[in-house]
Image 1 (cartoon, rainbow, N blue to C red):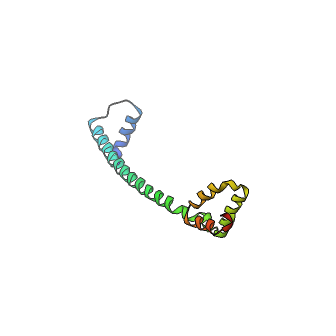
Image 2: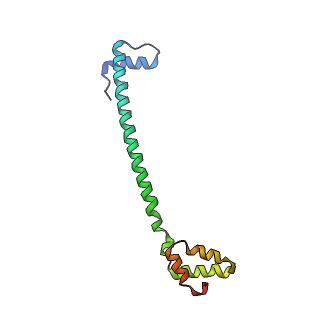
Image 3: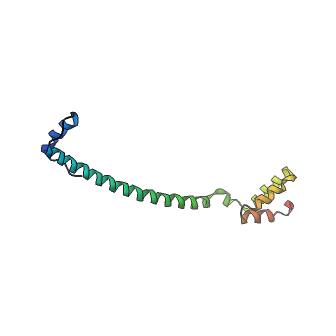
Length: 119
């Protein structure tokens, strides 16, 4: 942005507080200021768009990696098998639920298959 020259401060402050038309010289200066602000605003919009695109990539990566820290990943397979056994003991007709649990992931399937009393 072009800095205002000292002689314009008084004229500009009067224009800001009245409805008077600017002089030719004031109008030229104001156009220069507005054009400079337009350029600056366009530059900021471009930077903002680039930052928004970068944020989308970061959020997508975060969404990909965060589940890898899930506490259930640290539960030993024997414990998962015991949990599955409790489910079946509570209601023997939940065999469909057991089959569904086996479809969650390979480790859950191994946990279920490792518990012979489930089958």
